[in-house]
Amino acid sequence: MSKKNSIPKHIAIIMDGNGRWASKRGLDRSKGHLKGYENIKPNVIYAKKIGIKCITLFAFSTENWNRSSKEINFIFDLASKVIYEESKFLNKNKVRIIHLGSIDNLPEKMIDRIKKSEEMTKDNKDFTLAVAFNYGSRDEILRAVNKIIDSRINTQLSEEDFESFFMTNMLSNPDVVIRTGGEKRLSNFLLWQSAYSELIFFDKFWPDFETHDLDLVIDEYNNRIRNFGS
Ligand code: IPE
Ligand code: IPE
Ligand code: MG
Image (cartoon, rainbow, N blue to C red; front, side, top):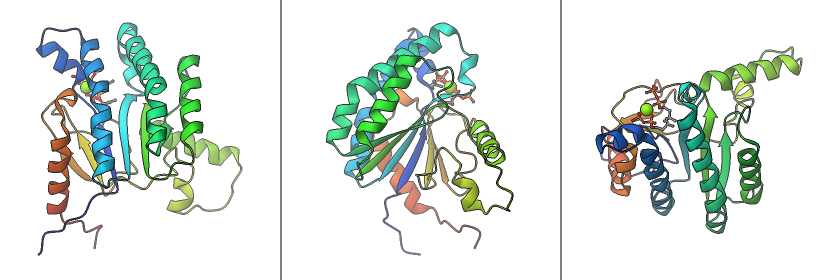
């Protein structure tokens, strides 16, 4: 079979390993989160340049509330700062920003910044950056079911009907899910949506992930044969 040469439309990334990146260097875990956030921009810019249309980033899970309040507050402050500082740049580059996840229990300032960045970029069509923050796939599915109950729909739903209640309803399913940091699991990320995604794992920690690794992802993607059950 001839080698394909296609660019996946949507890549989702589980950005794992920030804490271990820091611990390995004798640093506080917060330094790993800092480095991890700094690593987002170059990879997003590169993804857009090579023709990827959407990147979804897993930044904070519904289970990450089990961490120390010190670490949680650090991540919230950092994420708020990055949204505030980068929204204008992303908007200029025709990037649409979308938040996936619940705003429940997030700091007011952060909610405000998320809403403003979504509003500012809502007409951008070139590229979508979806940030899964306070996101859990089980939470998303359960919320969809509860919305259906609330709306008193009493007909049978198709898969498409059901998906329309998801937080990801304006995104295509990810062609590829990448996880850095060596663990080989989804940790409650896009469980429904990744049913036919190609899973690609990196041992390196997220702060060490380079744009060149995205080239490796594209190569690996092109080596996979996607059957979708056929
Ligand atoms: C990913 O890195 C970021 C978040 C989950 C918020 P971790 O913080 O999980 O880093 P490790 O896996 O402990 O190294
Ligand atoms: C997954 O990483 C969540 C994010 C990257 C935001 P975790 O570090 O929370 O996952 P587990 O606990 O190792 O499964
Ligand atoms: Mg982790």
